[in-house]
Image (cartoon, rainbow, N blue to C red; front, side, top):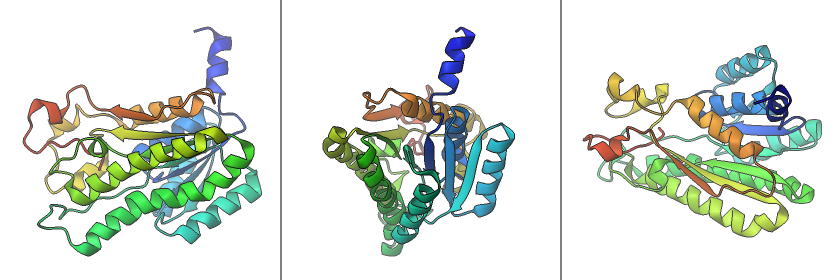
Length: 265
C-alpha cells in the first residue's frame, strides 16, 4: 500500500461522529478505538463511568477524539437525552453501535427467574432499540447512517450454555437488524447484525464455568471485532453488510468441547 493510499484509508471517518454503547471494555472498547483511529469522534456510553473515562483518555493519548457519556441503555429517556445532547453539540451521529449486553449466571430454563429473564431482554433487546429509535430521525433527515447491532453466535445457533434469555434476545437483535434494513434502506440507512463467537474478554470469568486458559488463548480477540466494526463503518454508503457471523478458527462449538456454546458474554 502506498502512503497516499494509506492516508486515504486512515481518514475515512474524518468529521463523522460515532456513538458506541457498552464501550467501557471488551468489544465496545476495541470498536470505539478502531473508529477513532479512522478519524471519528467517538461518544462512549456504558454504566461504569471510570472505565469510559479510561477508554476516552486512551483514545486521546493516541491522537483521537472521544468523550464519555454514562448510560444505562434500558433507560429510554436517558438514551434520548444523550442523543439530543450529542446532536446539539456535534450536529450529527453517523455511526451507532449498540453493543451493551449482559447474561446471568443462573441462565438455564430450569434456573432462570422471571426477573432475570426480563433483565437480559431489557438490556440486550430493548436497550438496542432505545438507541436505534433515538438516532434514526437525524439519519433519515440526512439520508445516511450506519447502525451496528452486536448480536452473538448464539443469535444464529442457540446453545444450552447461553440460556434461553440470551439466545432469544440475540436472535431478536438479528431480526431487528433485518427489519431496519427492510424499512430504512430506502432512506440511505444500513444496519449490520454482528454475530461474534467466543471472544477473549474478562467477562468470560463470569460464566458459570469459565473456560480454561488454553481455550481462551484460541478465541477471538476484542481487537478482531474492532477491525470488523471499522470495516463496516468505512464501507461505501451504497454497501450494506446485512449480517456478519464470525468465530475463532478453533471453534469450540465445532470441536466437541462439552461446555462450548460460542457466546460473546
